[in-house]
Amino acid sequence: MAEFFQALQQHTFLQHALLAGLFASIACGIVGTYVVTRRITYLAGGIAHCVLAGIGFARYMQVVHNWTAFHPLYGALFSALIAAFVIGWINIHAKERIDTVISAFWGMGMAIGILFITKTPGYSEDLMSYLFGNILLVTRQDLWIIVALDLIILVTAFLFHKQFVAVCFDDEFACLRGVPAHLFYYLMLALTALTVVLLVSIVGIVMVIVLLTMPAALAGRFCGRMSSMMILSALLCALLTSSGLALSYGPDLPAGAAIILLAGIVYLITITLKRNI
Figure 1 (cartoon, rainbow, N blue to C red):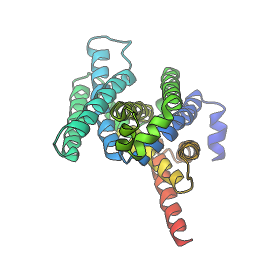
Figure 2 (figure 1 turned 90 degrees about the vertical axis):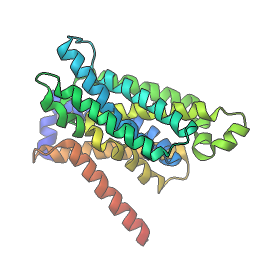
Figure 3 (figure 1 turned 60 degrees about the vertical axis):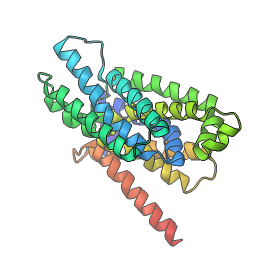
């Protein structure tokens, strides 16, 4: 641990990694609370795994067609928002089993992304970092994108928090009270998509749903109000990302995997102790 703090003062990439985890924790605490309360973890998982399609397409356009301004996070954002809208629409209007539909999107998104990455010269080796994350590769440009998305999520949640709470607990009652529940449900999924994009560069697509929901689930065991649940969830997420990064540095372990494993251990210990008290 001491080795990490010494390196943190010397290496810019470690400073960027730490800031990325802290910034993403803000959105994770807010949106994760909505996702856990509304019980749409499976929808968030479907959105998360469609992100690879956008990342793969962006990489392909960068390298093959020289679209250098088309950052992979832009592709991730586009595909995540499209997936959020389509999955949300199907969940509301279609008669198909939603778990089957999400499984189809889940598989197709991953497959499209892998196909684009495979056809991109020189970038096939990046597949593992997309799937499992590499917080140490976060750049200054990535940080500014994360901050911008953070601000969008913060402002939206602040303006429409009451409506989101109503949709989370009882959307039918919200409709009777004149709240356009479907509109705010779509907006909630859009915020989920933004948060997924924030977390992809930190823990990767495969594990993003764990970091999105586990701190919120832990916070929900100790908080009775959604506002306090959001604050505690953000603090827990910041603690987990920072601790996981520090613990992984010395043994040279994948930071994303270390963060997720630490989150799982903390969660299991917490529910075990709370059950025995």
